[in-house]
Length: 348
Image (cartoon, rainbow, N blue to C red; front, side):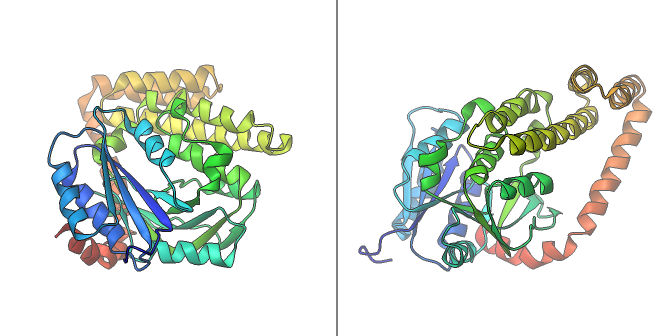
């Protein structure tokens, strides 16, 4: 890219002590078919070889920009720091262990060109584990334009909300602000929902990104304190926003509350599988006391007690979970093969 060509898109990559994965993420951005962008890496004071990795890539391509904080400011503050420094018309987020597929920018900009009123352009995104197995097919809505607030409602109903495959217009920041750090773990979901409550978005069925599920963070996201009361704050952000019509707020609260109940139950099951029985009991208590779901609460409580005191029962539950995971992996085998070579190329 010549010096006279101004970048149109900024991709923000916050990072902390994952230099090998970061290299792959940056390379996936540099491999885009659309060339007018910059990729800004914000290092949370890693203190390892992260700086060397980025410096090496920056020497090869001036579109790579690097900033290292003097101390670790936390993940959400790091995302917000990147947002505050966006100077291009469009921006996107990329975690340091995720990747963009080569036509991500091309697809999203085609969406903006086709629907100029759209403020978000979305591509299909898939989940993959660190071993290279897809965990779910690409998330898809109906292709086309979604206007608020119906677009937000459709996102909630399908519930596979990741911003990895989204390009945002900078005007969104001016309207809804930055990431709400008080929400905690689901702050990315909160940001996407608030944006889609205010602005139209366009969705493409073409795949644009792959989100890799870190086994450690994946387990963390299923912990009780990551869900409760974070989800309550996310729900209040939408249901207390008077810009959104009253009837829509009532509907959103109903949908999100139902999602929260299911998630608390899932947190309980995941906690039992990890032998974190305290979290399982906490989930059961909230389901019983706050939502009067006593049968689900009793199921979680009983299963936790049985697995806690009878190891054979615990190992049987783990065995059933492994069968479930293997069955899900079989459904996505065609995706494993389709993208394996590209991921291998980025890892070189």
